[in-house]
Image (cartoon, rainbow, N blue to C red; front, side, top):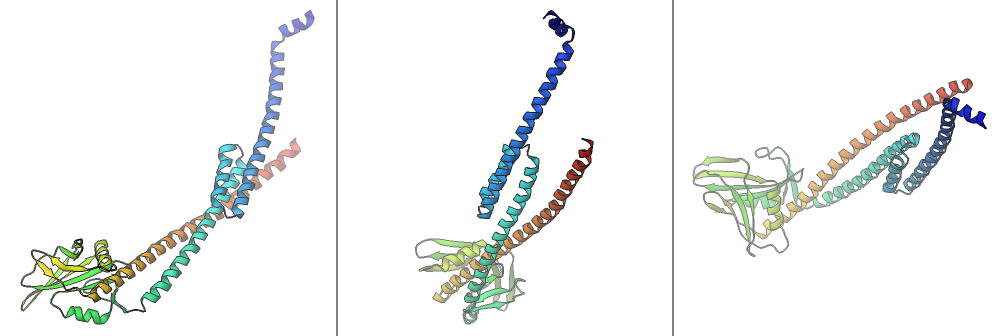
Amino acid sequence: MKKGINFIQKNPLTIIASLLAICIVLWGISSYIVSKSSEEIAESYYERANESLSNKNYSAAKRLLDSIKTVVPQAYEWRHKANDLKLFIRKEEQTNTLKYIHQQLDTIATQQQQLLKEQYKNIQNKKYQDLAQYVWNPQYIQSQRSTRNHYLFQVDEQGVCYILATYKGSKAETIKYLTATFKDGTSVACENKFSHQSNKIATGYTQSISFHGPDAYSLLESMGADKAQVSSFHMTGSKSYALHVSRTDLTAAKKMAQLSRLLTAKQHWLKQQNECINELRFLEKRINKESPKRNDQQEQTKDSIDVSEPAL
């Protein structure tokens, strides 16, 4: 007994080394068990994500794939697989979005075709703007132009509304507003934020002003509303210039506002379509770039194992 105690007292480093070796062995075993457990957990998340993907439940699939990184961050191989699958999910989502956009554009094209069967005409008026404009009822336009002070409703291909107002006066002046006042006491004004053109004639001046933008659309929509009753419609500068409003004018306002909404929606979906196509192209490049990279990494890992195995 005394010899054993003397041995421990004389060789403490040997004891420490033995204990350290035991700890290392135990740590290796526990690490292997934990690693094995992490791989199994990560794999289960990945399989569940695949099931959600097959059921078109993209949000649930993405949540499960994100869980691999947060729950088992040490499962690097499954994290890489999760990233690859998330790229595929994004591609699927964008593909479905693109299909939906095409459906919307097809619907709008059908509605536009039906709408333009009515008394619409597409004209090119280079004097006031570069884009071709849609107008309504050519006979109505001719009757309007025959009056002293007149106006014309137009909509361009982008869905932007224009009100081209013309008056004849004794002098040139800046017209600031075009205002419609309704019998219920409300009014809608369109501000002149743009340039105008004045021409001197024998009896004074003729001046044309192009009101356009959101204000012009609001005015058209209000005038074209069901049961709208306009008590006055006038241009305002240093003095007010009255404009005649008939039932046909209100119908024209309604038709042009309707066409504006349709063409504006078309531009919105065309923009969404371009963004979606660009996103799909980006994802294709990412997927094609990541796949060879993953394969190269797997080949390198396989080669290193093959080389090290004989040494063991």
